[in-house]
Length: 103
Image 1: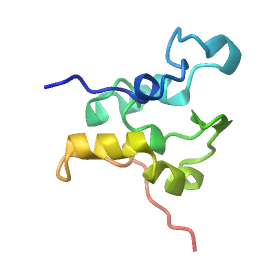
Image 2: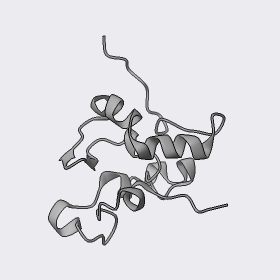
Image 3: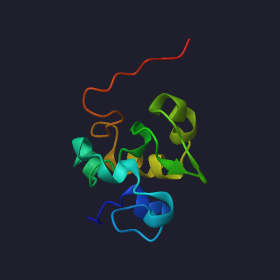
């Protein structure tokens, strides 16, 4: 089986630990979220980035996980992880995270 890519590898953003762009942009919250280690086979939240507030995609900070909901679910990386993990194994939220639909 091929190794599972983390978001920073797939997006080549340079915001992982000691990444090329951490001096400029800081380390991505997904790269340091140890509470999500191993979920969907990732390092920290590397394969659960959509559930982490403050990740940096498409040139800007994405905000809370609720604010990211639509953009992340249409993301090519989200779709890749969903496909690789399969319906029965795909985890969409962090431990203890609760979905609160906007009314």
